[in-house]
Image 1 (spheres, one colour):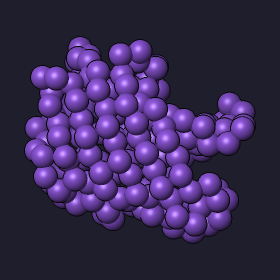
Image 2 (tube, one colour; image 1 turned 180 degrees about the horizontal axis):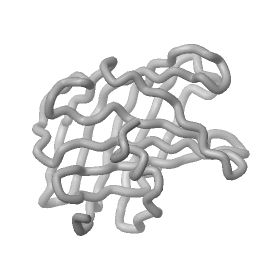
Image 3 (cartoon, one colour; image 1 turned 180 degrees about the vertical axis):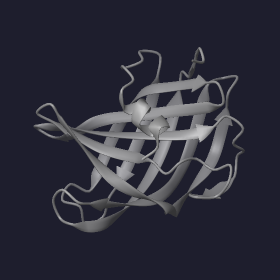
Image 4 (cartoon, helix red, strand yellow; image 1 turned 90 degrees about the vertical axis):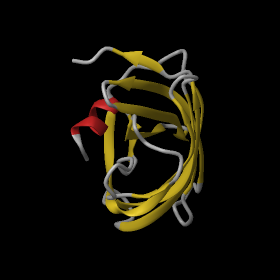
Length: 156
């Protein structure tokens, strides 16, 4: 996981952000997740989208995606130059955050629409992560993202 992706997890909820980060994980206990977009911002040359929602009665699921602000509306394979970083997934339960390892070179994202002026983003795709906490196996995630309310954050 890159430092940009890790930093995205530490961002507070952003009231202006709205939308959905919808997951389907076939074969993974609870298979469907509907995360609300909690953070959506542009900083220097990157854009960050973070979704968060209920995993079960005791835990939250968090997913972040980082991509360059120069990204175009087309299909990218993860690991390809100029593409988004593979999404990062974690589960927060009882104050403990467990991260899952996403494969950097498996899956794709199709940028349906990224409008930095309006602050809107729509994409879909899939990626694979390894569940080293519970089942000790790979899971493919099929996702759709629709986000609005992107804000500008000053560079560091």
